[in-house]
Image 1 (cartoon, rainbow, N blue to C red):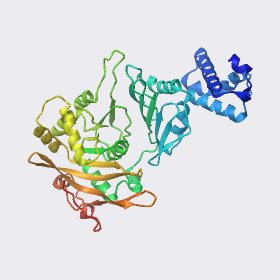
Image 2: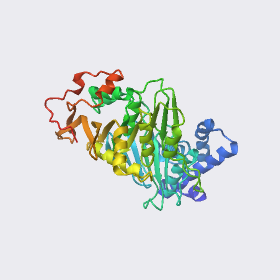
Image 3: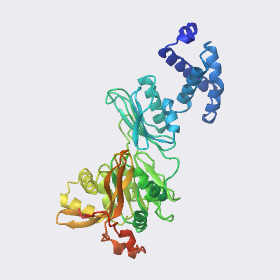
Image 4: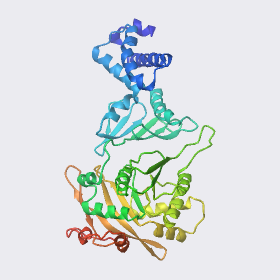
Amino acid sequence: MNSLNTANSTRLTGQDLIRLKKYLADSLMRALEQEGISADQRSAFVKQNIALVYTQTQLKLPEDLRKQIFDQVLNDLLGFGPIQSLLDDEAVTEIMVNGPKKVFVEKKGQLVKTNITFDDDDHVLRIIDRIILPLGRHVDADSPTVDARLPDGSRVNAVVRPVAIDGPAITIRKFSKDKLKVDDLINFGSITKQMADFLRACVKARFNIIISGGTGSGKTTLLNVMSGFIPENERIITIEDAAELQLQQDHVMRMETKVANAEGLHAVSIRELVKNSLRMRPDRIVVGEVRGGEALDMLQAMNTGHDGSLTTVHANTPRDAISRIETLVLMAGMDLPIKVVRQQVSSAVDLIVQQTRLKDGQRKVTAVTEVAGMEGDVIVLTDIFRFIQTGVDTDGKVLGEITATGIRPNFTPRLEAAGFKLSADIFAPRPSVNQGARR
């Protein structure tokens, strides 16, 4: 700090301020370690001692700059650095750090570049370590990608060099502090009351349901809401890569995958957890997302008495979801004929719910589709509800409406046998909307 002590504080460069922040942070961190401060006392200790350490530098920064430096150091030591303010902003739903000088956020479905920056690549790496080290995970040149979660449940992905060409990157899908309920989705226009009543009946009647959608379309949010329809007296096993489901029932057993250690050993995959869950007396199995060979194990579980399962899959249409599941089953390495795979899918899956993020940022259920069996070698899909886009207004907002197609699902007798006799109004189409439900 000698060069900073002798420098005129009015002529401090950006690099000088970076060195000052590092000096303050390192001094406070050493003090924390020497004093043996417990985790619950760290915040009070740092806030009390930062001014003392600053005084020792003999610098006299302008008050607004001094406060800014203090805030940044506190965020680095107690929070997640420059992005802490974005994590605290409830309007921000996603944070994307594309290297130290490019930080973007999603607000109201739209991407916006912020004026927030990191000091350098090392600064970004320190924040990545802050996130992943408490979870026992690591990232380096040999293992350059990592999935993790923040204490509030927000989902984190980090990528470092050499695969991240322009420097370490962080993507955070924020965890909503308020648990959304089905009425919230109705008020947002994501689904209709008729659709919600139908989905509630299907979940309670123990149908196997797949939520399909693209990245950031709201699949997990919808899965959380639909899981709320599961009765309280059922045992639910959840399986995820990074735990983010917020099931509201009391009897929930949560499981999460484990990455390999530094020697590449002792990883636990979703497939292994799905197999293990079958020995845990589940009433329901909820898999956050199927993306590999575990799709076969899920189908076999659905076909052998473990009905009422819920999961998500990355796909842009219900038909694409079927193709995706077929591909994932083949990844299990069983060398099954495609017709056998399709028979497994058609007998196991009852319903596909398509979640879509529209061009204007709106998130809607754009199709609720019954898996209606096989015709020859083809799985038959029948839309029960669809979103029909009618145009775009002058502000770029997508216009349209969600409507029933007028077709009652083939599994209506099963619903009625389970005690759900849905009114004809639920399946009545709006007369202004042109249909076309069979795919």
